[in-house]
Length: 490
Image (cartoon, rainbow, N blue to C red):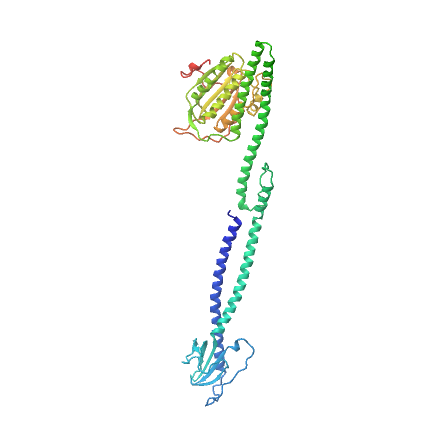
């Protein structure tokens, strides 16, 4: 597992360490140069001061005398600092106890040098007077200078290390504090109930995490809607299946208790009708569950709507004859981009709904064609009947799930038109409602986008709206085309 906190600390730590090492290296180079410069300046100052303090007419001994021994003044540098005063480059007049008896610089040239004298390396500055007779040489052991440099470097290293530790601790604390809301959110999520899908609070989190939280909340919202849809579907399905199951049980008991063959046959006919209704209800519930679960086929193909209509009408041929209804077709070839199975469900529900609410001898007309609507080419699918119709104030409500129009003798499930609305929305189609045939009954018009030329089209995302419109007047005269004359009066 890759830790965000660990990666942040690692990257920041490596960066700070490299900066610290670079700064420490530069400091060491500066201290080395500075320490050498300080000692050189000190040696030059002492030698020059000593030379100018010697009187020009001072009487110097003409023979060698014991060297003067200077007492230490308690300063650390005086214990190692040494000097010599030479006359005519041959006679040592004065020297400190630490100074050797031989010249620091054998050539007595003015300037700095680092000679080896008496087995030790010295840093020496030599200066002479204007006559070139008196030479003052001041020096210090390189080991002392190096020791002082090491001491300064050690102090600098200790302070830099302490500073690095403080900075590292500060960064660790800052990263922990910055990620504390994330840790708290993680703990809160672990304590949540299984079905607690409330949105996550984004306010306490860093701004950079807000897009992630918003996306996660969007997923939670979709999941909440899906779970709520499942709960609603299970409750509605249980409620809807209770009635046909009870009817099945009742008709079965009537058939068992029938004393004559006629009574038993009548009970069995009713039992078969209830079983067929239960089967239809189960199919609609399954279709509704698929739509609720988002199982919409993303791949769409180009299909001729008139051929799909003919195929579905053939399925209802026997049912229409048994119910003494006629199906009138007025179709023309028109292509749409669609999922064929879903359009089949839409057609079956529209046709089943029209046949169910049309009385014996009633008519159902299915019309499809391509036409211009508000300056745009669209494909029209219209299913109209001459039944009792639907009150205008119910035109929107009938597309809601499990809604039934009060007062209708025919009992439906209230699912069919909600499936129609859902499938139309997935295909970017628009739904219009109004009166049916001859100003009576009920009509539904579905307006699809025209198929893209030469390739399957993408389903537009515009939602379908179920709304009431003024009475539908046929946009095209319902004259039969040769392709569908044979289906008239099915």
